[in-house]
Length: 95
Image 1 (cartoon, rainbow, N blue to C red):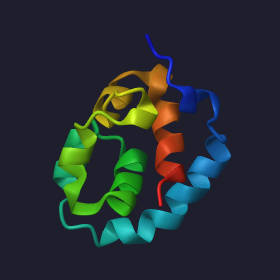
Image 2 (cartoon, one colour):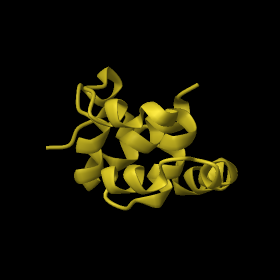
Image 3 (cartoon, helix red, strand yellow):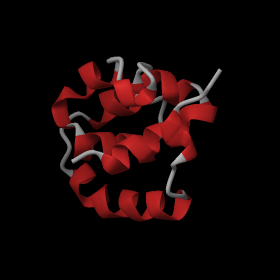
Image 4 (spheres, rainbow, N blue to C red):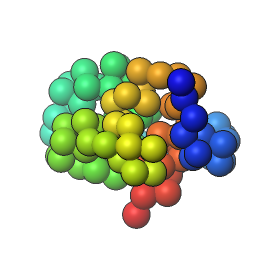
């Protein structure tokens, strides 16, 4: 079922972990942590990076069809482990 192109381009777990560490301080200041954690099924790493990249508009973004994710939503990717690395790569590439 999963076949997101970005999954094949994932730069690796070490790079992901380094980025999560980098944005962790910003996470401490995020006003809606509990709601975001709930929306990402408790995945704190994803929550931290979404908070940093998307901010308070996370709910809309998590449920949007994203062209780079083959028109799947970020929430869908979170629920399908075979595509989670594609979501991570997208988050790493976002400005």
